[in-house]
Length: 369
Image (cartoon, rainbow, N blue to C red; front, side):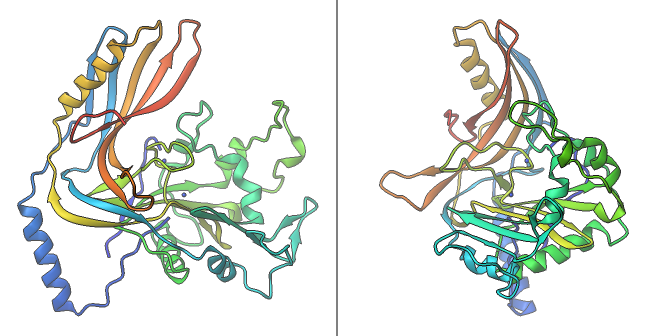
């Protein structure tokens, strides 16, 4: 399966998706030809790369992100049922694991590292996700600020393509994909964003503060070396060519690159961090749905803000075409997949206070979500 790899990113968005086929070569070719014939009859859309417009209290000055040739086929999404305890046992074998109370959704190693007592390895899970990390991740996490809405966001500083001594980013991704396969994790048409975590930049970017804003000097890493270089992969599932940025059941999700179904940090020691979140399987019903032109969507956005009776000023800085899920009435698991535009908004209130948030508009029917 072809994995789309994006290795140069100017701006940013935790599960990897492989679709393995054991078909014969002829069967694969026939399937690909059938898909190609189907695609040739779909209505595709090309959207602008940038868009500007103004309303009474809103300014649209957007970078627009959408597949080069967009289309949408209706479908359903169903949560994947992964055995997270089994995944944890593969990552931390029984002979390495320490004892925990029955029912605890965590597996840790017997061995700890350093004077801070970091577990050598740790895996925790709950709901529809799980997180694995090693003590090496505990040493570098203070150098990463992944949320685009955060004024301290810094992933763009790791966007420059590099090659580290332990291998290329492509080689590392192949190893990661194989490990995910071994863990029983499959993904739908994955796209991958790569960041290059070089130790010099991480040393400069490291920050640790307590809840009162005081610097925690004792948490800073003292011995940065080339062995602390890593590749960071954000692996996104896609449906109908669009990334799955659905809003989760436990709070809103944002359409940013760090908000991936799988996030992995890989380096010389191997995988030091793996986050799995909200993996779904998709099923198309084969019915095409037309999308609105982008200027129609933009007009709806202008009208929305022009109707607000407040003293705030609004800027719309980006638009991303993606997939969201609509929970159907009476159905608790299966979700209807919807094409949406996710807009990043910057609100400046009359007192100067700035808030960043997201608004979504259905790309086919124009409804606010």
